[in-house]
Amino acid sequence: MNGWTEGYVGGIDYIRAFYRDWSPALLSFALTLRGWRPPTALRDGAFTLAELGCGHGLTSAVLAGANPRARFEAMDFNPSHIAGARRLAAEGGLANAAFLEESFAEHARRDGPPLDAVALHGVWSWVSAENRAILVEVLRRRLAPGGVVFVSYNALPGTLAHMPLRRLLVEQCAAGTGPLPDRIERAVEFAARLAALGGGWFAGADGVTERIESLRHKSPNYIAHEYLNGDWTAFYHADVARELAAAKLEFAGAAVPMEQLDDLTLSPAAQAMAAEAADPAVAETLRDVLTNRSFRRDLFVKGGERLTPAERSLLLRATRFALLVPPDDLPEVASTPLGRLPFPRAVHGPLGEALGAGPRRLGELLALPALAAQGEAAVVRALVLLTSLGFAAPLPEEDGLAERQAQADRFNGAVLERHRSGDTPGHLASPLLGSGVALSRIEGLFLLAARLAEDPADLAWRHLSADGIALGRDGRRFESAEESIAELASRHAAFTARRQPLLARLGVR
Ligand SMILES: C[S@@+](CC[C@H](N)C(=O)[O-])C[C@H]1O[C@@H](n2cnc3c(N)ncnc32)[C@H](O)[C@@H]1O
Image (tube, rainbow, N blue to C red; front, side, top):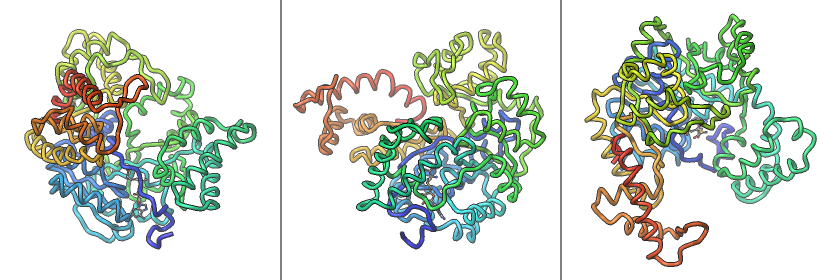
């Protein structure tokens, strides 16, 4: 093991991923819903956001590409993560993002501007108690009054069921030989063979066999960083709340708006029992017990100000929303981690139609007779579901859009160039959302061709074939280049008809 890793898994990079959970407009929406005044800086776009333990820094980079007035400070002690993040920032012209190669302890000694928001994703459960104390100290010293922290962690009691799995993987990997990815693969197969025997723990624990099966499709990079760290601690929410209280932080609510809706997961009797707890941290922990939650994404605020119901309603009504899919792609029933949720036509029909025409403030939506008839609570609930499930998003203020567009165009240009080789964050910056939008390699090559006024199918095929990527249809692999190019031309026609207009509305071009 390398000396600098402090028990964190070394020798294998984390996966490259973008997470929209701490996009500024989403943070503001989640806080407002729970009756907290969101930091003014988050709303006017001139905020400072730190991501501690940023991995490859893709989320910070894409957010920086979409929020030029904001400043991003992203740090990680893994030099290969930071080297890649700096290269992306340089190519994308990100003057507003600093990627720092340092440990939490080194970072805690650094001075810097007050932070309006901090993201701790994939960190809290995977580092030592000593490092958590250092992180608390960073928050105590640097988070601005009114600032918000996003923190994710493995939660109890749901994670209890998975503890023996982690142990199995750790022991098997330690006993194995050869490169770590191969040892991980063999360890997962071993766990799958054990699970196939059934009985014992496998019979008694919920969802374990399914989790092992899902690990067979995950990259060794993910499995290493989830399961193989020296520290791996699952928390009761109440304990996280108590540790963070040392930085004057108070629990503000679930970061995923939908998770704030108790009635989606709890019966009326269960809601009433959770509400009996006088301490909000205990109430939240009871909810986890009643739902057997295994992962949490929480928001905490430092000196958060409470909104009156009238102020909350005003702020919500002033919030703009945009659809992230064509309106006719909105489902009638959505499959969610919480089960199947119906989208009642009476609300979702007129809502989809109105947002299909362009972004609207909640106030404007409520002025439409069909939605006014449903009432504010029903429309807000529909927006909570749509935004949580990625069908819609809350937007930052219109002010500054031209500046955001200019920066996003420059950043996206660099990212699109990377689609030639496939080395991309998988997301482009959307100036409308102030956040990222997912894009496949082929879609990126189509957009690149449009920028360069080249034939899209030819350009895409040139780069895909150079990487040995074969295309096919209905299970048949195309033998000739002509067939592949024809297939790409047909995919491009579909892209131009449905996806490109949507991307253009989001300012992604
Ligand atoms: C699971 S990754 C999460 C990355 C990123 N936040 C994301 O969500 O994609 C955790 C990251 O924390 C970093 N890390 C762990 N311990 C650290 C420490 N003591 N100091 C600095 N970075 C650390 C690791 O290198 C790793 O990149």
